[in-house]
Length: 117
Image (cartoon, rainbow, N blue to C red; front, side):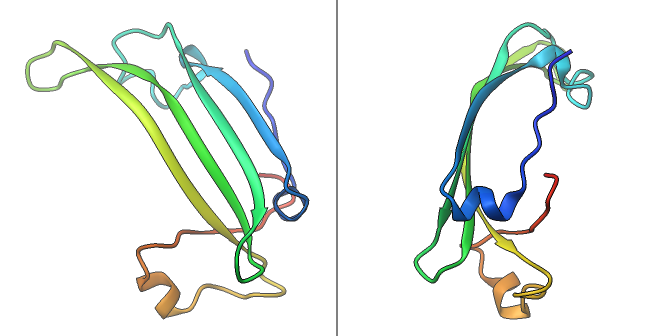
């Protein structure tokens, strides 16, 4: 079993920290029923940064290949995973919850700041 990594999200972002690694598909319990093969791994990179308006941001990149079982034909479906996503952190004390306008803006995603993420 792989070691679980946790971060304190606000300092991670504000100090511009970087974290990269790999996760074995065999360790992904929630995916195991959907995968045809459990061999392989998913690579990730997490970068902390400060956005243009001073907001704390986490940028996540996830890359790998999944062998899924097609529910229709029951054959293996190789699915290439290459996702890049940025998350604006919201500290309940400072920023509060995202406003309705924030939530309707599809160009932004929000995560609550956490000391153990």
